[in-house]
Length: 296
Image (cartoon, rainbow, N blue to C red; front, side):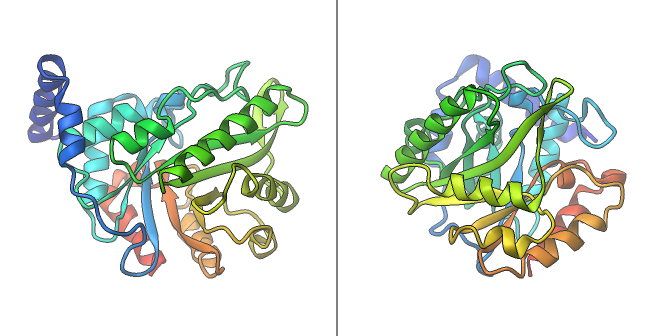
């Protein structure tokens, strides 16, 4: 869906990166930040695009959907331009592309932190912090950081993942920045890491994640919609954002599930990526507007 005009903007972006790399820091310093995290409706609507940094490029039945950076950026810029969209979650390369494109003024910007647990790798649970750290998030004037936490009790690397996430939570809190933790109980099935999406497993994951770090004052949770969400989210008083998940076969299915979960008192919004950026029919604006409508 790359338009000629956008292709020219991307070409200019690459030239800037090649000839004047300091422009990234300049754009971050100039970015107009908004005063609060939550939007006027008391909700937060974030578009996620941190999948490529972990080598996860598929969306629905398109195995390489996110492999074309120009196409991804055009979809992101369109999504960010829609009313009711509060911001973006991405690794440094995508955040910096969007900064140079001037797409992040008055937006909440969350930096993705641990991308080292590459999708499908033998070391996936050992999810090293290979992208943003707390200091870089503060230095770039971002609004917070996100970390993925998969807890596999049969994998000793889980201990390092827990420790690293705890340190990141503490570091972000020291700067008054949101720490968005996405926790799962996980296990290897046929050699691949699978998240366990039962109510019992998610309850346990939330309980563990809520206790990470020296303070939970700035901790938020990013959670999938599973069965019995009322009981699951009763495990913590921390504010939660719903995980958009995979691209559904029925485009009406995801908004219906989100709407039910959004009635719960700790749910403050939605983080969705591929569901909105690569919807059936490629109507990005329509998918984003439908998600915003669900938030009310």
